[in-house]
Length: 637
Image (cartoon, rainbow, N blue to C red; front, side):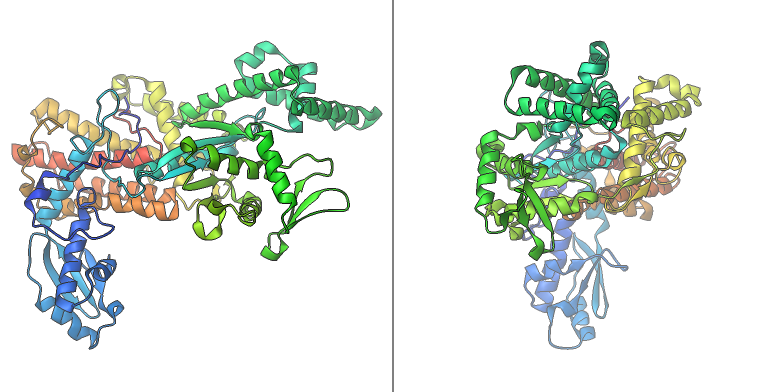
């Protein structure tokens, strides 16, 4: 049904690259390049070497100047070198010194630019071999069962670095609302992205699991609790109780509301004082809620390493943070007794650190939790970076939180270190069921699954071949939701569009899955009817004659495949899922335009095998893009 549900994992440090790499002339290994994992790096170094030798500029400066342009594969703008003379004369001088080789076929001098064209044979061979060995061969890591894990597109830039990614963070006793969707899938994507760049990643779910609302919930539970319903569906049961008790607590007649709030405060006070009975009830609510959340996360193909929360902040760490803040010159006690941090000089307003009754606020727990994480995470080594994936509505809160940490003097919180970061995002507008009611996320996911199931049933022949139709429909529905969410810049709000999201036409999630399924089908049929056997990790790559790949469309497609590692690095710079989504659509559009030019069926065996190998590499790269986006690539649907 679905291919292995795994993220991209960096190739082993001992990986030596594709076989063809050893046949090429030795090139300078410049900082920031990796010929083994990034096929285009060796071509860029070849360009830099030519610029350096012909114009007398530093080779590293020349490498930094290599960029893409409208002519050729790469362009160098010579004015950036500030060389004496006219640009036209400079580029002509460089062009006159050019000799075609295994890396570069030609250069065009069009002042003030030098336009370089890569050697097609080397590009095709090196790229496709690299994809193969990093997906199926010795460049692909093995899991515990010995299965290969795709690694093409990954790098080792973050090796030895630790990062905490905090995301999702729902509130206990409240259902996993559709509004949590963005934090959850963006955070999971970023976790995969850092892992692909060789960081050690720890995924934190910081739950809203403490506070007076638990006092209210306990009062409500005493009045409306149903143990059987709690065991069956804890989250929705507790939410129902919470809504009902809040309604009663808002009634002012006969002092009813005040009495409920007083009782709630007393219960929470007992929790804070460590009362065993109160804590046992709270623990039960927390454990059952987490169990339900895990079901939703599993469905979304997302897992966490740590379920933390406000309750997990150690009392001594909280006290230590408050005492430290009391001594800070930007913190003062107000007349009403509240402790206030004055951040107005930083244009961040004032924020309350401690209420007049001495109870800490959300930001205070955040501060203590951050310090606690640095001291205890990664076996006490601490983090090199920590990112919070939180909606843009919380921009002020996060800015105040970071500024207070900075002013408290934590080295890891200093602004110039960029070690803590807020990854924000816009809102989902109009998210409701197709019947128009605002709903929780599992309702949305159920509807997308059911709709996809209906579409699949329409093709009886294909439907009969699908191993688990409901699970497949769920994955396609999940893909639809995720791609619609990650298709645009994350800071933008977007409209939740049912008809657009569920379409198999245009730039949608189902369209991406359809293309991956088609690539799998082509390979299956070629093997079954024509006996075309593509190389596996155990077969020699020399069985494929890549010199037969000469079509311009194929060359265009392979150039895009070669750009996949660059795309992964680009996404790291801006933390944009849309960078990966855009690439996935680019490659699927290009694949669609290649079917008629790169026929497999009915072709001479060696040519058919070479073209099939190109499509297999396309499948491998598209599958890797989907995995990076936390999506399981399907083989049938």
